Length: 144
Image 1 (cartoon, rainbow, N blue to C red):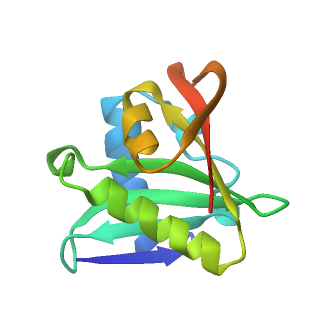
Image 2: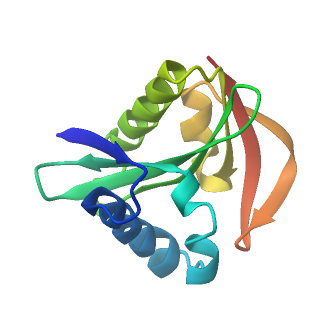
């Protein structure tokens, strides 16, 4: 198992990330492609967890913001690998990368079904429920 990351939107790592996102967000959850693939793709750092050399099973992306704030987005695990700790591993990798880059806070919009997952990882819910791609979310934050 390995975790790789890239900013290169022409790389195999990025293409693997997009394949997972298409499967999870677009096919499973019905998110339109024009919302899923957005104007921030080139500004983000894309992470992919590989079970072996070819099998991409989890992804997330980081969008650097101002004042030590990093935004975790598009975290997804292939359906057959959920509940096996891969989500935690990729989020921890993204957190470690953010710390190494000098960021001190991670923010994210968590789907309601993922609230418990993020709370167990130390994230705190903030504000009211909101809709993103017609899916209920809460803003969450974690300080390093």
